Length: 361
Image 1: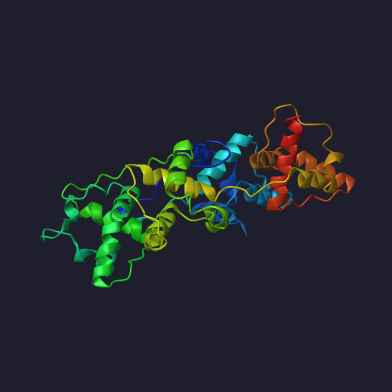
Image 2: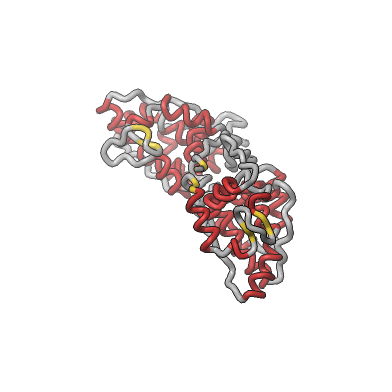
């Protein structure tokens, strides 16, 4: 039995709710796969990277917008040479594309029940939890926490206090696991159950809504703030890697005086949604830096006047600008001798903040 890679209907992103399924469709509509690949699909041309891998590396909306903006002149030249249709999309459509590419990093690779059996043995889980028909303190075959890795992690977390005492009594070190271990263990437990678990076509992934933040604030925020903020510690990790890190962290919490209390049904999923979302948030943007940048990059030579009142700018707006009207703008800049402006990740965040400040006047 293998757990297949899941297509997520939507993913938690801080700017707006997004539709990853629509984003997958837009990859074809925008001709992206004529030069790039995504998990083996498409046609990689020259040094064109796999979009899924590249977007995972970049991590935040402003980092993605920066990379695409700086790539605009080369992209236009390549598309003209290959006679590829010019991409035209709205802010929301680019947001959906990026959401889809980020959603590919929610999970680790497909899980393997056979490897899960080895993990179960190597981590000495069988010392207390018996698989098969042998009598034991806890029969894996009767577990109800094997529908997906989140429910398994929730069951493990709620049992961590008892396990910590048992490990201490046996003078064992805490069994640390990886994200892949967690996926594989789920497949193994599901295969072992008397009533095999039915794996859904996709996990129910909540948006980073108030419930997710409230669960995080109640369980985690007392320690994870300031210098210990998870936003600065996590970089492009999958849900399973974050879940495994939580498990590995349980003994340290107890040593520090904190008690990893039991999670209510579904609460672990909410916490993971919020924590995963944190690593895809841009850093602090400064309006005054954006204002200076607007002047230094000579944006006003083409863009005069304020944005329309109430207009909302996001990094996706900048992608749509560079890859839509940007072709005309690029030609005009070339005719007047203006060099295409390079924008760093911080530049992109600051410039977006400045444009929003103008639109709010």
